[in-house]
Each structure stands twice: as structure tokens, then as C-alpha cells.
Length: 506
Image: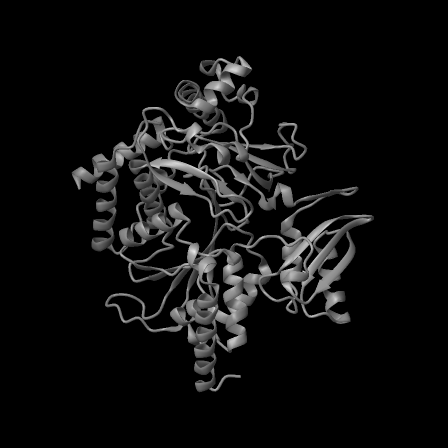
């Protein structure tokens, strides 16, 4: 216990003072939490909240802490990376003078710059070991390099968060329904599950029939639930599972699913409702995270705010017109982030443009997580937003409206663009006057200035389809052997239909 106390103290000092984490202390801290869980059944000490999130900081202290860490990162980036050495040389800015108030003088770093030359952001003298890429759903994949210690830190932070939130329990069986190419998320989730004592399967985004069969099967592993109890999935893949399950006649009695962890896309109320009709009562844990800014991430509170730990990243919300001006409270803008030390040591990023549009809070939060700063909600990608005479239309209101209509298959496949008088929306759904009316009413209820509605029956007919993560394919096999892949999918579907028939389902 004494060793664990020292490890906890070192962890707290690193969180508070920004000093490098000690890998052995991280391991000892996890060992101590596992021992407490075995002895007392759960980790319940009130101090854990302060330990895992760092000390609660008032706004002025937060600015000073972030300013000091920002200055440290700016100096290192200017001296030890090729990209920022050139940025500071051209701008004439002294990195040693950068603080919270003068950060706007540093040019914003585009996603394209990181995509084109990821090695240009790697600090000289670092120990890059893991090239971690985004899935590339909305464009060419973006890569950041992490050292082995950094990847271990990300996994440990995930484990500590799951200890604190109890999203994973020792008796859980967990299925990862995300692409294993999502290296950081897959590794961190599997590591966290093992740390808590749960068991995990990496299923990937395979044919939905196959995932449903895995969820429905009994897995007799001693000391754990008899079926998969936790699923991690992107919302569009969860939607695909729901739609396929309904077609095959599955119902709540066929599953033991209790919780779903989602991220990477917008989880709509309509999808939540329809998922519970198929799987039964579910808890949803919705998070926001980016490979480029790891370990920065947001979690939703009971009010729907997206809260984040300010010691991990300096967050700015800038205007939608590219003028790099901060937006007023309550307004939408583009999230720009600077990962801060001691969390990032290999790929250094300053004022990185995530291209994600977020809504800022109009008033300070008054929820149970109010000690942490928050955003109001996530709205979608900037390049997918449409400007018009009445302002802007973002992805969130459109997809929420469409998935609220039961006649629209999940996941909603759609597009939208500016047209005379407002916004044109296209959606893949069975066409009928009743459905058109219902969709039009839903869009208007969600604030979309609908000027034109186009209903199509196939995905190929969509003129401007928005990409969905559920359509990602796992590499060379899908390209080199489409016939074999199609045959496997057909056989799987045939087997599932036979199973449904034996159960007396339509």
C-alpha cells in the first residue's frame, strides 16, 4: 500500500505540475487499484476523482497553468521540429514569450500539413515507436507518432478512467466493434478491460450478421457474464447492427448487452431509441476523442455537455469563416487544440485545426461535472456544413431529424447542400407521400430550412453522400478478393436466415 501511495503521489504531481510520467509508477498505481478492487469490490475513495482528473482549477489558475505548459511546448516545437522551426522563423515570433493571451499570434496548423509530412512534427531526440493513424473516413488518413511510453500512458489513462467511471466491470465481456486500424482506441480499450479484470474480443467492423451472432451467443467464461455485456462501436455501425437485427427478427431476449460505448460520429436520439427496441435497456457512454490530440477527449454529462480535462490540451473555438477569431459564448465554431506536456513528447502540435464544428456554452455549466470546462455539443465537420441566408446548417440537426423517422433505414444515408431558399436534403428511404411529409416535418422541427427534399431508393443515387464509418473496409482482402468477401457475406447471411427460421422468426 505504501508503494501504491507513492505511485499515486507521483501521478498527481505529474498531472498538477506537468512533469513527465514515470512508467513504473503508472503500473504500480494500476496494481494498487486492482488490489483495492479485489479487496473492497470497487474503487470508491472520494480522492480518486481528484487523482484521475487532476486538481480542480479556477479559471485564472487554469490560464496560468495552460500558459506555462503552452510556452514549454512552443519552445520545444520551435527548436526540435522541422515544421515549427520554419513557422516561427517566418512569423518572427519568440516562442519563449508565448502564453495564453498571445497564443493567437501562432498560425493555425492545418490537418493537411500534418497529413503531408507527419515526420516534420516529430521532435528531434524523441523515440517514435508507433505510427497511429486516423481511419480516414472523411479524407486521407492522418498519422501521429507516439513513443512506446506515450502509448502506454494513453492506455493507462484509459484504464484509470474506466476504474473511476465503472463503465467496465470485472465480470464484463467486451466486444470491440471498431476497426483495429484505430490503433490507440483499440489498444487503450483492450488494456483498460484487462486492467479492470474484464475480458475483451476485438471483432472489428465485420459483416453485421457476424457481430450479431457473436452478441447473441453464450460464451461460458468463468467469472464473467454469459454473453457480451459491453460493445464499443461507431454510431453508424451500431445503426447497421440495429437495422440488420430487425430484419432478422432479433429482439431483447436474444442478447445480454448492457452498455454501448460510442464515439467518432453523432449518436442521435432516434438511434438510441431504436437500439433499445432491439437490444433492450441500454446505457450509452458517448465520448469525443481525436487521434491527433490524444489524450484530449470529451465525455458527456447528464446535461449533454462535452467536458474535457484542461491540463491535457489548450482548446480554442474559432470562427467558421477562417479568420481565426474566437467565437462568442453560445456560438458555433471550429475546435482548435494544442496538446500540452507532459502528455505529448513525440509528435508536437500547436493550434491544430481539427475541422470539427462545436457549439460553445452560452453560460457556465451547472451540471455534476461543472468543475471541468465544457462544450455545448458537437455539430459535425466544417467542410460538411452549409452556409445560407439564415446562417449555417450542420450535420447534427439533419441526421437527428432523419433518424427520428422510423421509415428511414439505419444508418441514415443522406446528403445536403445549399440551394435557392435554404437547404436541399437527399435521403435513401422507401418513397411515399407519407414518408416525405414525415421527413419534411422532422427537418423543419430540427431547424433545417428545407427548400428541397430528394428521396432515393439506393445508395448509388445519392448525389452528395456523407461518408459513414460503417462503410470502411479492412484493407487488402476487401480489394483483392471482392468475390470471396461477397461469398463469405452471403454465406453468413444465409446461415443467419436459417437460424432465424429455426427460431420461428419471419
